[in-house]
Length: 85
Image 1 (cartoon, one colour):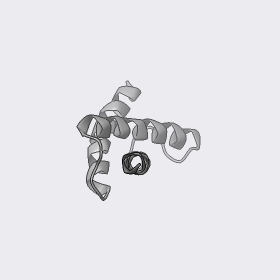
Image 2 (cartoon, rainbow, N blue to C red; image 1 turned 60 degrees about the horizontal axis):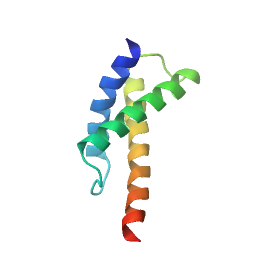
Image 3 (cartoon, one colour; image 1 turned 60 degrees about the vertical axis):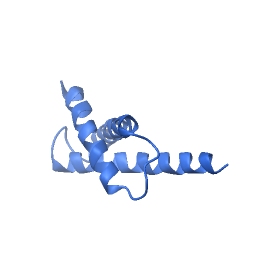
C-alpha cells in the first residue's frame, strides 16, 4: 500500500515540479507524470535507505518534488540538446 501512495503522490509531484521548473517543457502531461513518479520513487528509496526521513511527512513530499525537478532538468537538458542537432 505504501508504494501505491508513492505512485499517487508522484503524479501530484510531477505537476508541481512542472510548475516550478523554468522554461518550456518539451514533454507533455504523460512525460511529466512519469518523471514525477520516478522522482518520487527515487527520492523515497534513497531518503529512506539513508535515514533522512520516514515513510510519510512533509520532508518526504519536498524530497519527492526535489527528485522530480532534478529529473525534469535532466530531461530538458537531454531533449533540448537533441533537438538542436
